[in-house]
Each structure stands twice: as structure tokens, then as C-alpha cells.
Amino acid sequence: MKNFVSIISLTLLFTLASFIPVGVRDIRVNKVVIDAGHGGKDSGTIGKFSKEKDVALKIARELGSIINKYLKDVEVIYTRDNDTFVELEQRAQLANKNGADVFISIHCNAVPRNKEKIYGTETYVMGLHTSEANLEVAKRENSVILLEENYEERYEGFDPNAPESHILFSLYQNAYLENSLSLAQKVEDQFKNRVGRKSRGVKQAGFWVLYRTSMPSILVEVGYLSNPKEEKYLNDDLGQTYIASGIFRAFRDYKNEIENAH
Image 1 (cartoon, rainbow, N blue to C red):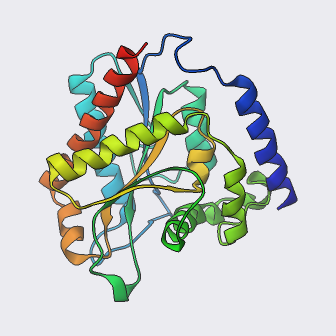
Image 2: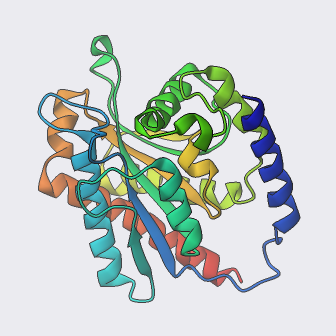
């Protein structure tokens, strides 16, 4: 835990020292990393007949395909394009190494059996959780590190099951928070107004994969596999296309807004 505090403090200092105020440079959004959550030995959330890793991958591929078709100046990079296990650290490193302008991570949600009626979309940005529900989502998504070798050393003592580890994320002030919130809100607006989904809003929580990325980043929970009706929708080809199209329109509008403002 001591190492974890140290690395967050160092990251904060580096971020503040390297931050260039918006408006003093030309900003283009020409490269996006699309991250299909989980994969390989990590199934993620498991519904009655489907797995999060498979649904996330299909939607990620569809999103990339639409971007390639309609935004010719944007390079699409996938953290995975098949059923392979990719460590959280590697996902963020891939985005940073390639100088991505936006990072979009796609996931499916879940709740306990006695709350199966809950459904809808949520889009997260890096930040301090404000509710126990947000914390549980972050803990579930971060727990994948327990499947990685030497995770204690690699993640500097971070414990995905300890609430205090996630609270420490509040020490990290994301220089890209404003843009991340803008993109996240656009995604939820598209889901609600164009796709016809129930939007559960934009939320903040401590996701390791978002903390490590050095660009505007969001994590989209496209729906609940624990809800039987929604699980069917999330596995429908047309439903996946609608979801991917909503995220695409949000990304397109965000790109236009950023580029036209500079």
C-alpha cells in the first residue's frame, strides 16, 4: 500500500508538470484505442448464456469497423481483437505507447441475483467513487489483476478488494478529466436519445486501466448481463450494432468539438 501511495503521488506531480492548458496547441483526434474488456482466461461477468469477454469483443470490433468506414482520418487500435488475455497494465501501455488521442474501454455490468431487474448503461471516467455501487463496479473490473503473474509487485501493492486502495485514486487529478467527462456524457446522451437505452448516467470510480492512460479515457458499461432481457439484447447482432453506433456518434461529435475549438 505504501508503494501504491508513492506511485500515485509521483504520477500526480508528473501530470501537473506536463499539463499543457487547452487552447495553446493544435489538437487533432486521429487515433483511438478500443479496449474490449477481459478476454482469454478472464471471462468477466457471466450471464445465463453469455460471457462479458465475448460481448465486449463483438461490440469493440463493430465500433472499430464503423469508425474505419466513416472517419478515414482516424486510426483504430484494438487492445485485443480475439479471445486473448491482456493484462490491465498492458492495455494502458498500448494506448500510451501509440500516442492515442482517446481510449474507450467496453464492458458489461452485473448485479447480485436479488437485483436482476436493474438494467441500463453507465459510462465511467477516472475519479473517486461517490457511492458503494460505483465502488463495487470498480472492484469487479479491477479484480482481473489477480489473474496476472506477480501482480503484487506490478501494481505497487494495489489491492482490488480493498476500498482504501480505490479511495487513494482520489489523490490523482486527471489532467484529461474535463474531456473525458465530455465524451462520457455524449455516449450516455446517444444511448438515451438515439439508441433508446436506459441511461444510468456518467459516473466516476477508480479504474486502474483509466488511471494509467495518458489521454481522455472512458469505460462504457453497455448493459447488464445479470438482467435476462438485457442479456438477450446485448447478444443480438442488431443490438450490438446500435450500441456501437451510439458510441461512434459520441466519438465523432467529441472529435468535431475538440478540433473545431482550436
